Length: 181
Image 1 (cartoon, rainbow, N blue to C red):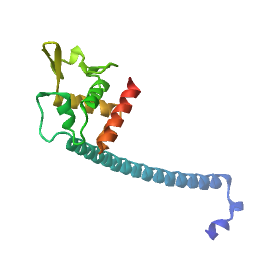
Image 2: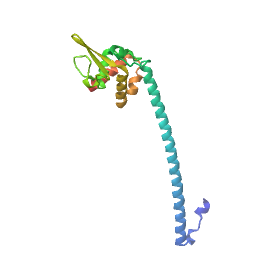
Image 3: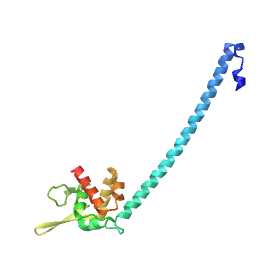
């Protein structure tokens, strides 16, 4: 370094000084390019690590959600009370009704009751008339798929399935319902 400080530049011609300046700029550019390339490679590595962690987290959430659903597949129509009991953290039939309304399977109503939209009867619900009243039953698997998709689309999936207390889950559903209706 001291040789550079004591380098006799007074004896150089303008062409020689230009040549030295070009060499210095070329070296600086080369060094900066290498640093930039190293940063890009490090960024790619971090991005890959992030994607792996994100996928692992998503898999963990899916496993947790599935563990909170009924252990055996339910491919038949059931009433709202049974539907709510199939969660590891039970939901009342009223909360299940609110959840079905939130995700768009049932019509919102202020007087109570859970009435499915006509468009969902068949795949998601069946209504049977018994004299002066009707009985609505819900297809567990189809409805749970719809609920899970809605929760994911609206970024409530993880929050919903992380709740381990019945009262907290009821409050969560109530707050969702009030915010939408």
